[in-house]
Structures are given as C-alpha cells and as structure tokens.
Length: 280
Image (cartoon, rainbow, N blue to C red; front, side, top):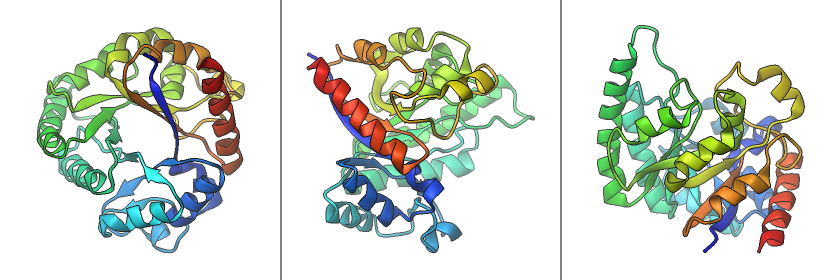
C-alpha cells in the first residue's frame, strides 16, 4: 500500500515576510494548506511578542495554538522544536514541553536534530550526552504517544549511518526520522536517495525542501543543512525518486514544505499536489 501523504508547510515560509504565527496560519489556509508545522520556543521572544515572527511560545496556553488553527480550518500536524541534543540543560526542557504541547493540540510529531557540538566535547562524550537527553525525552514521548523525529542537519546526521546511530541510542518506537530532502543533498557526503533508502523504515515525517541550482553550486559539500530551500519542483531534488522510495511504506507520511517565501509555499503546494495525484 502506498503511503498516505499529507502535505503541510513549516511556518518558516512567512519568516521573510515578518508575519506572526496567527497571520502565518491564515496565509497557509489561503494557500490551501490543511496542515502546518509551527515552530515553538520557551520564554517570551521579542519579535514574536510584537507579531513580527512566527514562532509560538510554549508559555502560552497550548489550546491557543489549536484555537488559531481551528479558526482557519488548519491542523498542527507536527511541531518544529529543534533543540541541541548535546546540551541537555536546554534540550530536555524544550523537547519535553513540545511533546506535551503536541499532545494537547493533536500533533503526532516533534522534530529536532543534534545541532551544534561544543568544541570541548569529544565524539564519545557527545553521544553519551545525547543518550541522556533522548532517554529523558523518550519517557515523555511514550506517555503522550508522540513521535520524536530526528533529521539530518548536523555533523553526525549528515550521513544515514550517523543519523541512525543517534536514533538507536535509545531504542524506542517513539524515536523516528524526519528526513530532510534538502539537508541530505547539501551535505554531499552520500547519495541522498541511497541514504533515504537506508533509513526509510524509520521515516515518519519529511521536510520537503528543494535546493536551487545556485545554492547547490555554492554550498554542496560545505554545509550540513540550511534553514529553508526554494519551491519544491524548482530545484535539484528528484521528487519522483523520493516518492518511489517512500511509496511502499504502509503509514501516514507528512511532507512538510520548508521554503523561504509565501510564493514558494504556493508553488510547492501546487507542485506536490499534482505530483501525488499523478502517481495515484
């Protein structure tokens, strides 16, 4: 049975337009998206408080997020809660609170990556610290039945083997993969499609990120990730090949568009919708 693809959009698409979370959800609905991936943060972030930034504070009532989404007929399918797994004093609180929020609004997935390794930390120490972070987080994920999905974005996750080493630090049905099509391509360490093939059984969420030819030429092999990409279908990613790998999976898979502008979000939705319809 082919995967049941859900097309969503990461709220980063309104960052360049200086829009608030509520305004971003409204725009996503106007573009025909039914699912969004809000970014969440702890504390009271200045730009968000004055409605210039899309991130949602976890100090707010979680049902405020649901209320905003319900107003526009949109669902929060996942949360972007990227936290430094090698910094447990930050990551444990941030991720556990994101899991509780996700549970409150009906989101099934919380996305993160390893982020930055401190210079003073060895590779062995880094994985020991990540084990501790994930051990604490997994207990909360299990109680709330929310998947914690780790994506390729850093020095360890730039390869599929490195990604799976982190995923398997704490064996659990609640720790999975958020495959980022753009980051895996830009890392340039292994063929991104072969990498996806190796981890596909763990892929429950996808950051649908395309990479422009210009960015590919200037950055591939020099970075391990990028915040956003270009419109899906307008870059170097072979989307048919991506779906060929994911089609056999007998489960829901969210394709959450990660792009930089409102126009790119519009074009991405149209491209992915047409692509999926043609394959059915």
